[in-house]
Amino acid sequence: MNVIYCDNDVILEDVACLNLDLTLDCGQAFRWEKQEDGSWSGVAEGVFLNIAKKDNKIILKNTTRENFEKIWLNYFDFEKNYSEICRRLKQDKLIAPTVDEYYGIRIVNQNSWEALCSFVISQQNNIKRIKGIIDRLCKAYGDEIGNGFYSFPSAEKLSTLSVDDFEKLGTGYRAKYLEKLAKDVASGVIDLEKIKMLSLEEARKELLNIYGVGIKVANCALLFGFGFYDAFPVDVWMKRVMEYYPNGLPECFNGIGGIAQQYLFHWARNNL
Image (cartoon, rainbow, N blue to C red; front, side, top):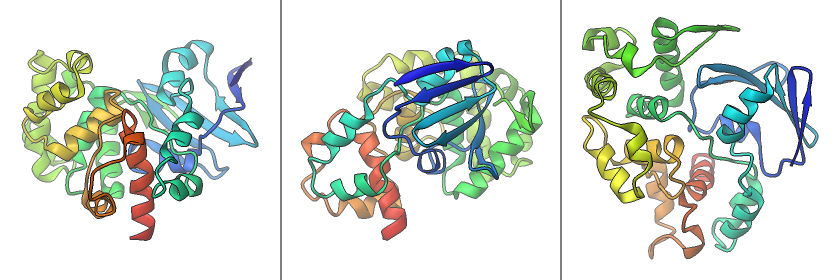
């Protein structure tokens, strides 16, 4: 990958395995919007970005070298060898054609707090409603950063809200979970940075101790917000997929099961 810093843009050449449509609209992140020109706009770590792919170039518009190196390099996992990961996955004959068909799905490394809140909101919800709730949450309690986008509100900010405040955003029964989660993170009862340092099993146990967090939410948060690439969320779609693996997941998935899950999940949503 070659990085070119050009005025207020960052241009990446020879980026393998990145399809923006598949990556940003597959249910792992909820704050990206596709623009009329085919680019995507969104926010991470309180910073706005417009990103586009043209030919074999990825163009990050109106960003600085500092923000690219501090935020976007890790967010889009540009330094991970996804070509090698896909080669490994294709050792399994069942997933091989799916990797070819949907080549370019990546895991985006989201802020732990935002990811955990987002997947608490995601329970028994569809993507459109999840995005709507998160959008209202950010507009009501985040900071405006321009272009009609807002930062994701901090735990400290949300810790001042009541269950009723959360309910007014359309969170439904999840309001009581969010209210306690915000207070516990803000007070330090829940230490998200400490959880990142644990093993996958230990981190999962910590998240399952949180009020309102079940196994699916825990695995989604671990995969998309805590850097555990072997976390393997299972929902109604993935339960159907697992029928194709009666003897468990293949060895080639070890350490990258979460990436395999994204390919299998996308296949299931489109074919089952």
